[in-house]
Length: 180
Figure 1 (cartoon, one colour):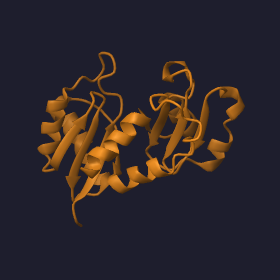
Figure 2 (cartoon, rainbow, N blue to C red):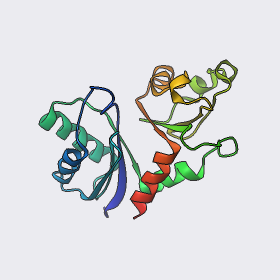
Figure 3 (cartoon, rainbow, N blue to C red):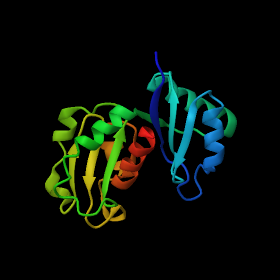
């Protein structure tokens, strides 16, 4: 298998006092796995790297190292640069987005069950809007993420999957870093 650019999205680190890790330490940890061209973005657990490992194998390796070296139980979701490009290209809420910091993508550990998604009544969340994608949910929060009920925890609970959210600006920046 040839080496591919991948983006690791760590769930729940550096939020308040929970699971603190410096990005320099995170880079070293990922480099220690033999992954190359490792870059981090922001303090919220975004790592771009190159490896021949499959995304599933890379996620397990990073999770294992976080546990072994730092004693942290952290879920890691990975998208290849192509998958992340697809998330950006398929954005179904581009026509309503007026501020990229208020559009969020909740990345999911697997494709959600369509019946579970259909069971969520969009009218209960107005003015917020959501659209399910392949392994992600796009959420437009015109009043900000702090005021929405459509959080990562909501999607995890409703869909029975692990999720981690990033704002649109972060998603597009991660794609840029993956393509550098």
